[in-house]
Image 1 (cartoon, rainbow, N blue to C red):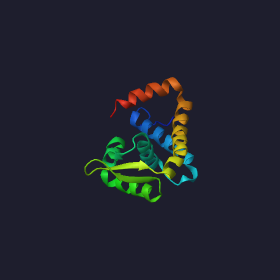
Image 2 (image 1 turned 120 degrees about the horizontal axis):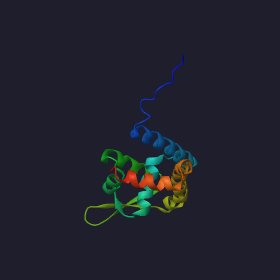
Image 3 (image 1 turned 30 degrees about the vertical axis):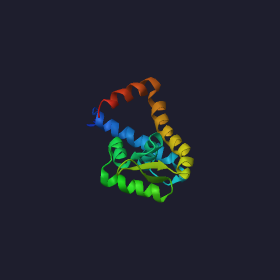
Image 4 (image 1 turned 90 degrees about the vertical axis):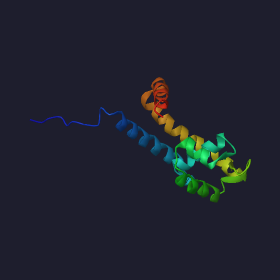
Length: 139
């Protein structure tokens, strides 16, 4: 007599969140194509695009990236010629997209949209909106 296999993680929200995040990240990373970057770099670029002059520490807080991890990410993007640091008020240094960085932003936005579209297609627009609002409360 064959018995159905039990999945002990199936009733756990966290398990499904991780699976969904992994699926979306694969779609986003695939959409980056020839840019040679991954999701975290794209997220940093999106934040700077939306907030020109933002400080490195503010980017880290917004994306929940530790200081020791955000510094090499920003340096990598500066080295690629997509970001530049400019003096701000007092001792602050603001982050800005270069012309080259601005030119790649359509591809970055398209990649982000690809991941979101994969989720929306899977669950529908209404469920997507409801899930997003619910997940925003888990901060």
